[in-house]
Image 1 (cartoon, rainbow, N blue to C red):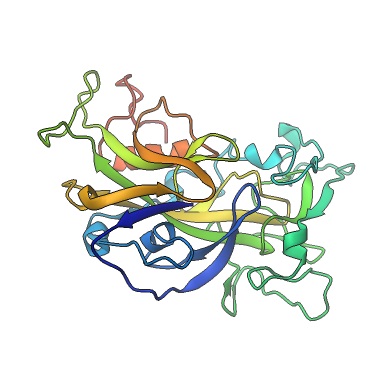
Image 2 (cartoon, helix red, strand yellow):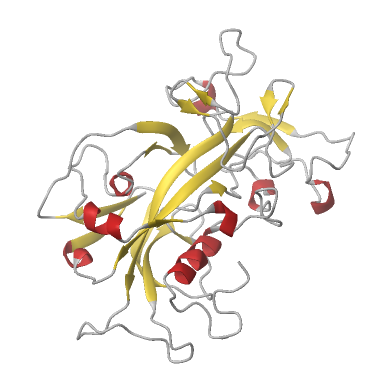
Length: 318
């Protein structure tokens, strides 16, 4: 979690909860609707740390899942983290799934995935669904189910034996793992950017590509030591918490400070699950958590910013 502190103004305390979210090491965070910046700028019961959201919104854009996905809504080779072991926050080993057996269309009669749902989920907190086997639980998959959004950003998903099936393919594990909802678990987060500037306030251009250098707010995760963005794009996310029956989908909105003036009075503070937080230059040399490199590349393309020293591949191949 990332906290951005502003010392001059408090924002509204109101929130609109949409779904639960669990980070990789098992800590649960709530995910909120608009204003999106408020989720990462709040810690516990401290004052809302949101300033200038209207200014950010005027410069914001949504990252469309079609920019990253194939015709079936899931980009090829986007299902690697979801097959890693051990499962986050546990010692559970997934059944191994070779690349050629990931697709559900490939017949695999000997497929024998491990069943696992975390104790914290089975305890029945408000943000989690009951077990499918409970007679009082009748979820409406592929549609809005009361206050729970069970529609996928990638279209209809199949239901097998009463359980939703991961649209990206087999993961070697059934159940929900650390995720609260059966089916898609929706998130909404910002990618916060600004132009890198010199001491005189002038934009810095890359000496080889000739394009302006864009910076984003990055957190260094305590669990794996990788740098990450506090947010992602719109659609399925290849995440180590995904299972055959529960997966993460998210929507990233880029909030860009064009002049740099809004960010001058902000102090970045790392939350409980982040070791460090800082502004990081965007380029293809970044090594980021999960699928975040692809999302950052989309932002660089949209802003016509520097990405690669190779002019032929600069922000290409999306």
